[in-house]
Length: 224
Image (cartoon, rainbow, N blue to C red; front, side, top):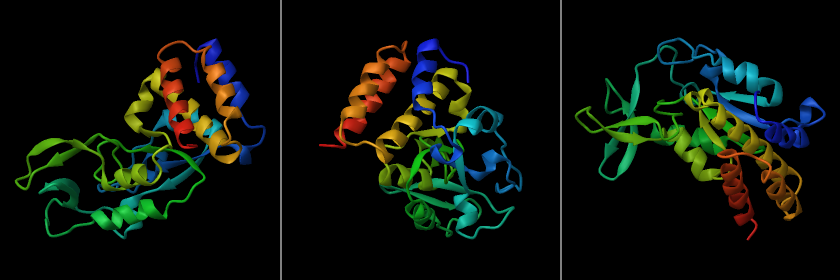
């Protein structure tokens, strides 16, 4: 993973000595090459596998398969119904899998230290999924039901769409946040580690510096 020398120093301070110490990150299963998509295909992501894979442990899941939908399967979409977002069948609007997808998120247990999600997916997309009205017209963007519930239940774990990983600055920021969350959650919530990391973050160039400071502040607020 290419990075500035300062970012490399921060990474090195966080890197575990053994595989079992690596942060566990959830991943939409299709991104690891599993043929679980509605069309029976996958969306293997080389950046995820080859650049993040050596630094993290992956816990794969496909929420749509987890609720019993077949592969391949009729497509589903996010639909605005009054003031709520529902995930319904495209061909069969009576099909509503919203709660089922949310329940999959509720069954995910920590120590997840982040999640890489399939962009635009009605289950997994993070702030990137098209929202439609009852007539099928796109009217906005939101998160898929699984991703939305995941963020609600675990608001401090870093989330990324697969498309976000194509941006080097985002990739670095995501990895730093994953390691910060892992360290904060598993070892020290008492403040000293946060103070040390805030001092180390001063070495980083923008936008990494501002992004990491903002995230560390977010973790610090959880202690109050």
